[in-house]
Amino acid sequence: MAWLVLVLSGVLEAVWATALGASNGFKRKLPTFIFIASMAISMAGLAYAMTELPTGTSYAVWVGVGAVLTAALAVIRRKEKLAPGRAALLAALIGCVVGLKVVS
Image 1 (cartoon, rainbow, N blue to C red):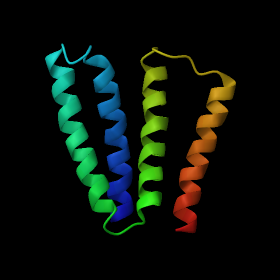
Image 2: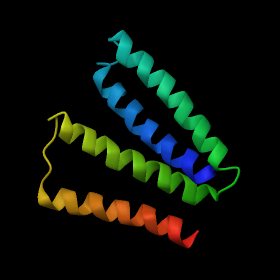
Image 3: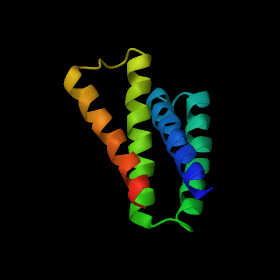
């Protein structure tokens, strides 16, 4: 259960990071609200996961999932381009997150 909560919290990290960028320095209300709500829920999920999983592993998985999904959202929204090198590094990051699950 903790792993599922951790991954979902990582997904919410991508939501709040994207909303933060869209908030235009907290000047836009809806993205600011989405940022605050998703960040609070994401942090609560991370805190819960850390009660059952090692802190370092939990944080690495949370950041990894959030970073990959944030980059993917930026590509989907056409805010960034996905060069082959960048794609390879993001794939490696996914591999590291999976590897942490395997060895934990």
